[in-house]
Image (cartoon, rainbow, N blue to C red; front, side, top):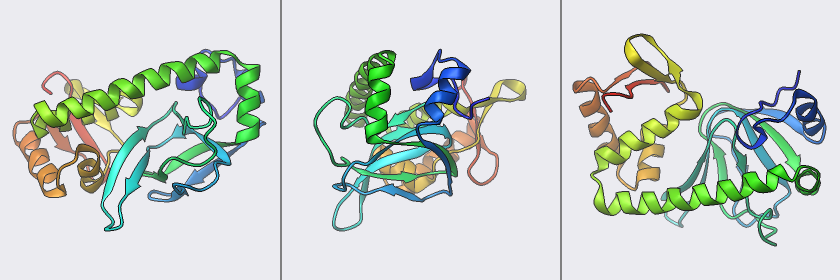
Length: 220
């Protein structure tokens, strides 16, 4: 059986097809906070998240980061080079949690796109989703309080990897650090800490130890 999963970009693929795709690349495990690629470097490989959480970010000369995208199980990244002629990585890529990633060289990825036209459709869906996400993030930053933005982020993290628990709670096993959440939301880590504590007090969320959090989707 293939290590790849029939979800996300490979939704509805058969195990035979997944094993064929897997043979075109390699599965590699990464620790948390490992650098995958650097903005401006030649784009040589694409990545598919088998397990874990990854972000793509920009960083200024003062070291301040802005998280542009999050990638979880079922996501393939980056999309650059698949929809245009760009040949360099558009941002920095780093693991947030320990990850299992499928790596495939760009020339093999282009061949897969030709072999499986459904991947063209997945790319179109991804670009539309990413465009809507960026518009929502901009609107939220202008119109929505930081607490609502944080709740939306937690709900999003719960979708790909949330584990149902007793009492209607959902466990997010690979939650972002407060610093990473702050970089994604455009607020300070202190603000994220204060808002998380508020969610805990209101019993809309509860800590489950380092890197884990329970949320009540109905209450949130």
